[in-house]
Image (cartoon, rainbow, N blue to C red; front, side, top):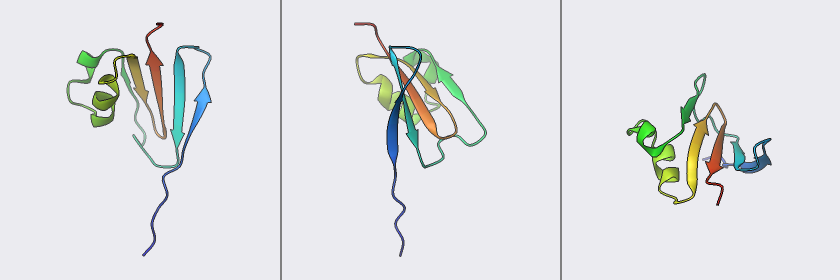
Length: 74
């Protein structure tokens, strides 16, 4: 029985309010989703819904193997 290990590391982005979290697992193969508000998610992504529960999250971008989270300026 083999167990696959989830690896996550963080990268800076050109936007000082955003951080990119890269993983070795596929999140959205061949697809991207950009949620600029909590209302934009509308149940389409459990991960984005959970991230928007944090009071400082302003936006979530999901791609093949990474998530970029943008926080409020304060």
